[in-house]
Amino acid sequence: MTEIHQILVGAGQTDAITNMARSLRQTLQTLGPSGIYAQHPAPDVIDVQHLNELSRHHTASRVLIFHASGGDPEVFKFLKSSTDPIILIFHNIAPSELFENFDSERAALLKRGWEELAELRPKISLSIADSKYNASCLEEIGYRNVEVLPIGITPNRLHSCKTDQTLEQLLKREAPGPLLLYVGQAVPHKRPEVLVQMQYLLSHHIGRTTSLALVGPPTMPQVNAVALEQARRLRVRGCLFLGQINENELATLYRKASVFVTASTHEGLCLPVIEAMSFGVPSVARRTAALPDTLKDAGILLPETAGPELFAEAVGELLDNPQLSTQLSNRGKRRAATYSSTSTSESFLSLLKQVSP
Image 1 (cartoon, rainbow, N blue to C red):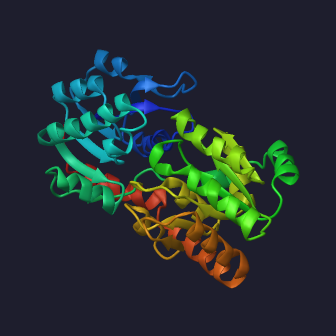
Image 2 (image 1 turned 135 degrees about the vertical axis):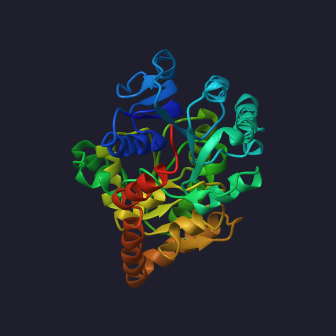
């Protein structure tokens, strides 16, 4: 019986790629033994083993699936020396130049990640990208015949989560008016400070009563620090920095939100936009990287260089035009449904037949 195992660089309890791997594992386990392994699993992740465990237990019939999202010398060494067929699922690696002014070590690791990906190309039996944009990135470094398949995305998984009563009470006290929601890591290209400026314009200049909730792990605390200092200096009303939260809390925010906003300048797919669409929350984003293809006509796409003024204007348009908001909400639900894990799993199993151990 063929074993099919997934390899990640890092794994987190609420990490998007980890959750994609979990969803895919359910499909793979219908075929035989299947596990998830990571070089850097978080301590609270009990269903992902360290990559060393996979090294110790080699079987004659095995296929490896590598979820590429960053560089790591140990993962690269393991894959480079492996004699097993390798399937690549590419989730994007952020360009190193986006980090150079913030974290030179992280920038160097990202640069190395692209180099490792290029070096692995001859060993890859099947290349899959989870967006058209990511496929084009692979093609730029020499990959050919890249399949586009958003595997393991389950946008409706949060719909069964309970409403968090504590957070709901906090929102009633601290978040008056329509709620604007941002979900994402604190990294430079997400540009949370633009959203803080947007909220400042809405509440202090335009005179709207709105609130902004910013959610996500503090991957680079200095990025959040810039946005926090800006909120403090401008005395922005209705601005909540909630940090990393659990899935019940996240579902509560999606249910409460009137508009999802992201000022990100680089996205390989943008899972939070897909989650927002599944809840019928219209989005405002920049027309850059994968976002136009992910969002399509289910939101408002601004120019790539859009500043807080254009974001405030777009949010105001949605809040003033219930018909437009409802139209985008309905389109978003239909768009999110195209990411059904059932249909993508069937497509993946069909592709899997091309790979033999």
